[in-house]
Image (cartoon, rainbow, N blue to C red; front, side, top):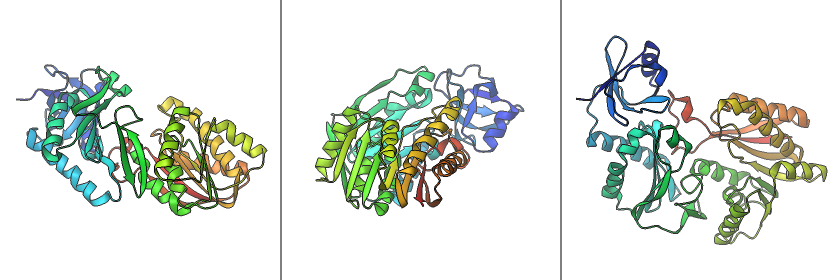
Length: 387
């Protein structure tokens, strides 16, 4: 018999709205609940609302698993994994790397599973999912016979759960340098030590979409390991790819070699400084891509982030040829789509340019957005014509 945790009326309203997170301030009674337990959730009148994972330390005390009083057993987990698999079969094409499970959006809160060919990378980001880590590894081995399963549990959120920050191979052997294919573009990734789980999979469909706009002279800012640059190089005469990290550029050059892409020049520089210098030199580009890191990692950073986004977009608009294309992204959940469009409108006004939206895009479809959880919608990508 699972432990029962009671929540306030406000918490019950969140459950009714199908939001999966219940905050500690809305828990009224959690006696007997152990860290990582699956618990029964009841409202202030004692009505059963469903089952959840319980955390003893995080401000997110409950992560809803089901909105009825069903048994949470191996068959339950298999059914959720199967549903996630079916979605990817429908929407993932032309790639050997994609997100198999996207946490809350797949009703598997705090669980991330990324597939890279015959290897899997897993993140268990709460006490409850961490307690189930071995079960998930066993399920992946049973269903797919992978070469390796790797955990990438270095994220700060683990500390908020009172969990150690760890990474490494937990099944099989290290794949070493691992190559993936994305719509014909090849990338070498490091599944054990690379950024995120090895690659920025959430921008995959946006990178492919960017190819159709590539032409002439292209500037790719915050190139990291050259992912956008390599797609843009397929249609461009010349690509200038910029990043402040020398080590990232070493890997970007390696990726360019894998694709025999001789029309990309990589430059180590601070993007803010370089855009300013290019404006002063009256340089011009036909296409500019801006894919910066998250400027707003929390709500208090939004104001400063808006200034940063405004500056880089303003500078980019000023050095685009008339009729040029600006591909610009924000991966900050706290930067809403409305706020981002306001930033772009302000930048266009300051630059004295008129701007048309050609495409509004978000994270790739293997990162689906759960309508009842705005937190799952974080990546905004706008493709603009700047006149």
